Length: 107
Image (tube, rainbow, N blue to C red):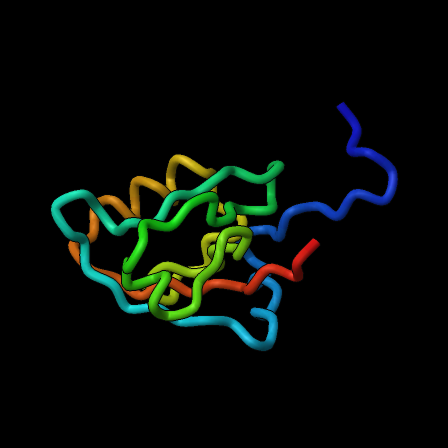
């Protein structure tokens, strides 16, 4: 099946991922008894995931992460082009981690 006209192909394994946007938010958080207190929603293929909900007083919320922000890295690993479930499994397997978010543009 051919790609849609004008669709950008995902980066190949030999190409470095595109640079991170300016103004990203880095959050260092540790799992509590109920997890990280941050929930994600899958975006269309190749676009990663966004924050869909934050628990009140979670470390992410205290750091300024908001609903709609895009998760771009976990422990400096670019996750923008990883499958949704693979990224979730990575986050859930870590007792603590650094998450990097691209703030929502408000649209």
